[in-house]
Image (cartoon, each protein chain N blue to C red):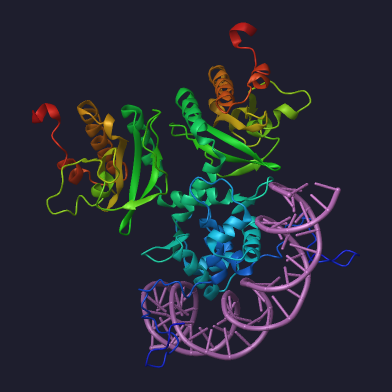
Length: 257
Length: 257
DNA sequence: CCGCGAATTTCCGCTGCGTGCAACGTGCTT
DNA sequence: AAGCACGTTGCACGCAGCGGAAATTCGCGG
């Protein structure tokens, strides 16, 4: 669909403007097969064929054939009771994607320390273009807790993690860790700090999330040092220099008082 | 491709023999796109286009077009340095697959208890046809530990988990938990017990894995009761009757002695 | 600096693959 | 019993996808 500019398009032009990730140039059958996978919602274990076809905007016949191919490779499975569900191969590839980032050896223990010491949920976000994505999460053991899923995306710039990821670029850099109270999500409070890698780049942000009503002075006094401590430790574990993070750390209460 | 048998094939024959999940009847473009995803090995963060095409047995032109479609949906990403890597969408779908099983709310805490009390790795397997698959895993904090990945498959009938999953079908049912020493993997010891759901079916197996040299009498005395305790607790948490598991439990040492 | 080869990407014509229609069985509700 | 929704199969048509050729860049060595 991209019209040729004035100059006749010579084959093999390398400076193709990749700015247009249009829907054309795509392989239709693959487009449709992936749409079938994405037709499964968040909390839907199984869907009948007709529903999947309707959501993807495909004829049942087409959906049936594509699902057959997906099933053959383990990307979906047919349930004995009828209907389709996502397949185990997605788990394998999802884990491989995470492994490619080579972060979890250090991030997971840090998250579990945060959760165990604060009794609240802990999460680690990475920047992804103009957004952020939750890569790892460890849920609070308490019955009332925030809910979020690994893999989910959220905007940059808002929310504690959203601001922590860009904290070092802000002109008056904020004190660390960043604290949010009902900022992006009503009734949710969060504490987050950036983590640096060996090149000094922001590798991600680590923090604690909890219901806002539970975030009183005692919780604040407990959680802020925890998050800062883990952000510094994680930065060091990744081979980075924790100085930029530690320098912006809030005074510990006993010193500031 | 399948030749019509002697009888004229009337459209709409319902008694189709589904026994042949052959490679035909599949949508070729989708087959190839999925082959590209599976071309990424276990520890390969990034691959150049030529490698991917070669592994999938495709011409580079074809691979380029298919990868473009996959990238458009977030199933692969182009790295700034050149080359392709698996994409974040796989993480989202992998999590959705697990969520469809609705197990992790109870399984994850049990695994973390096992890991924290034994200081060894804990894992949960489910049966999948004639094999088993590792659904969840929590790694030991020790520097020398067994390595395995969530999503990996292993055979039934061998290894502690492989035997635990079929323990209740065996004629002389084995004592629980099942113990293996270098059985499937040299140098690896494992302790596992089955977990039942509310229908009395085997929902999976839970257990501990460790280097064989560390599995001495003290470790055995510590880990066996732990595994049995969590298998019973998890069965109860899923609404199942733990009696079949508890009845096969080994006598606790002080009683048996 | 220049030339060679490998890697990547665009264009294009042919053909075989994928699509959707029609038909049919099944199971459930009216 | 009739009606309806769902799942499945076969088939012919049309275009979508395939692969070759060519253009371009990059890396390497002379």
